[in-house]
Amino acid sequence: MLNDTDTQAVPGADWGADQGQVFLIGAGPGDPELLTLKALRMMKEADVVVHDRLVSQDILDLIPAHVRRIDVGKKPNHHPVPQIEINALLVRLATGGAKVARLKGGDPMVFGRGSEEAAVLRAAGIQVSFAPGITAAQGISAATGVPLTHRGLATGVRFVTGHCQANRPLDLDWAGLANPDTTLVVYMGQANMQQIAGELLAHGLPGDHPVLVVVNGTRPNETRLVTHLAALETKRAQIPVPGPVLFIIGRVVSLLDSSGTLDADAILQAPELQQVLHG
Image 1 (tube, one colour):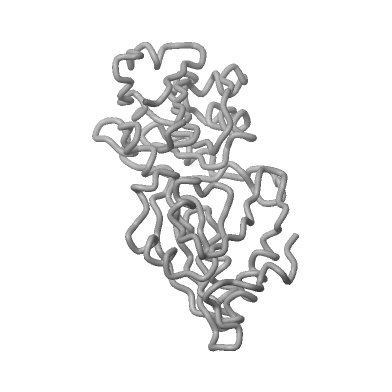
Image 2 (cartoon, helix red, strand yellow):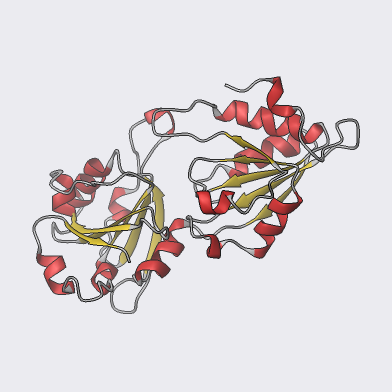
């Protein structure tokens, strides 16, 4: 829960001056070198930074020491600051005259509720500016060398979320998603991955269809797990480390550069999960 003290005593803000503004900033998946120059400039210009849980410490360390930080991070099934309160906080801070950096992991416009927050702010007459972020799929593709599209393996890519608001049942286009010529990227899917794998199998994808699971993508503690749909569906593939998880499902996983640790053909034939530690 937030209270009035969360909008007071922000260094640099003139609470009696003209209305402030909000920067909606994508922090990327964690590697500070993936942060855009525009995002860094906005962070340095801000009076206060309102940030999510998935923003890495390396990114937070780039915020000037005098800038106040407010953590509004959520965890699965644990939302200490509901979205409606985050919206209200941003409005209060900006109407009080502050330049507010709303810092989100990944890209605020890719499963980041950036458009929802922008709509609330604009309805309140507050100026909103955006700095895009490298979304997790792009960052992890670059970190692992696994492309999202590749001639002869994948002619397209689709991003979906594996979690619905208020834990409602997933209602996705399973028939369309179960396309062997498409790379499927699942965000926030750890809790429902058994169901997702089962639906994809039921709609025609083979049990040995490869899956790359990346935890803490682009960060020093990144972990890569290689398995297939059948193992996920039967829960034989367990994720042993904590952190944000991304699933890449598709034949492009065969191009994983395992630095000699695992042979790509053996990975795709293995009946159980195999693990490759980054770095």
